[in-house]
Image 1 (tube, rainbow, N blue to C red):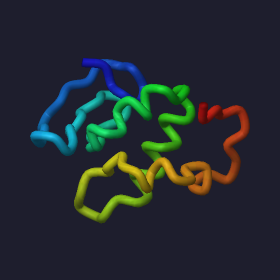
Image 2 (image 1 turned 135 degrees about the vertical axis):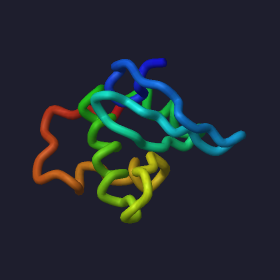
Image 3 (image 1 turned 30 degrees about the vertical axis):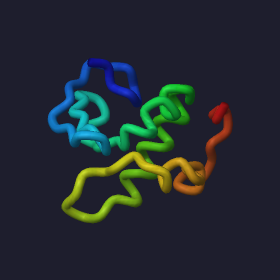
Length: 89
């Protein structure tokens, strides 16, 4: 499979029935993504997808994988000092 964040080689290492998939990417590492947000993430440009992943990392509970879910989409640019040139379309 392709990583939903960077488009590089990745694989699904776990999947819950209807809730989420756990992705292992050689570039972005291991993370979970809520299945309901896969389509939303795919509509963003790569820079914006990485902003969402970074927000998920900063919102994650220590000892648990970052999870791309609704909170990571709310205001991902708050997690960077600047985000010029990134497009949330």
